[in-house]
Length: 451
Ligand SMILES: Cc1cc2nc3c(=O)[nH]c(=O)nc-3n(C[C@H](O)[C@H](O)[C@H](O)COP(=O)(O)OP(=O)(O)OC[C@H]3O[C@@H](n4cnc5c(N)ncnc54)[C@H](O)[C@@H]3O)c2cc1C
Image 1 (tube, protein in one colour):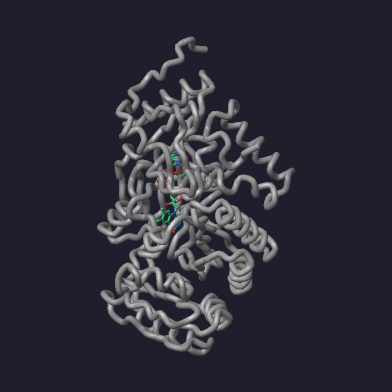
Image 2 (cartoon, protein in one colour):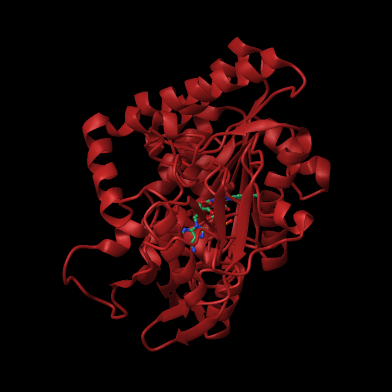
């Protein structure tokens, strides 16, 4: 073991710059008093840090763009932030093999653009795609707006290069379209939230490019009718590429930023899209009929790409619009699609009982809701009630057969509830798997497996 305990690599010394790497987007995230930041420039930098950190038992926080909403990329006291944004090469986009090979620091939108330039499509589409990284997406198994048709990040990761604590570089998975040799270690790393290793290269599957999407917007006078519409759309032979729900308060928040063309006088709005090559116009007419049949009050078909883009821009503006409203706990529960209305009703009941504003919106086609629970930061009672509401929505999701997180992950925010979903024995098995890769527990300690 080395006796030199100083980091053998250049760290960020400017305190102002360093501070920008301290926290992520999670509610209440605070910077530790003492930590180091390494901005990795290449594989060797990552190897160096993980070799040293393993020897010195120093905590390491793998980090991308810090857009995590769960505290999973916040710096740890006396630890090292190992930021991989600089590993941002798109080294291969191969139309024949339908794959891309990229560094973890590539911004999601840049990979989507590179694929599009080759006539291909990288579907995962978190609402943060303009600024989050592929490394972060893989580590959180990010979802997003078009999962209802295309699935999540895990469905597109073929192979990984990962550096383990101690500095060993491993490869998982395969470049080929098929491959079943051995256990699926790629799947193990996807969604592991930086607790098993640091991802240094990602091989992603690409699919043929879709057509520019067309959009249907439907307004509903009751949540139950909106719920019926979502279920009916999920039973369609040609699935929509997007089914998003906004409640009245979510629509008001978006429209307060700018006029995105959303009507305000309704209980719920559904945005539905088709991107099926050669059939978008047929599909949106079909979806409009399904929505009307389910009880929509108004159904408008945005039948050109410009209008469709405006409506989607409104959906993408939801996060900043809600951010502007003030501090909030942001939920990320997911339930069977058929039980989404019950989840929303539970959320409304929780809001009324605690005297809180809870805005409901999310990826309705997946049963994945992001209730925003607003509180007054200067009022301890308001914050405590909001936290209690956060807990009660998690409990409601589990009772409805759902999960405590659909796509944002566990981080620190939801670590206390992991045992409730998995059970103690499963949690023990998962801790044992972590120990196999990270025997000294240096990677993101306290995250996911908190106790
Ligand atoms: C406005 C907004 C909208 C969002 N919308 C969505 C959405 O629609 N869908 C969704 O799924 N998420 C969404 N998110 C959450 C967030 O953007 C995702 O979790 C994203 O995948 C995080 O990427 P990042 O690069 O910011 O990672 P970070 O926040 O830096 O890190 C996230 C996790 O990944 C780990 N990590 C990062 N890089 C590596 C690496 N190289 N190796 C190993 N581990 C690593 C970190 O340790 C941490 O556990 C949203 C966030 C915001 C702020």
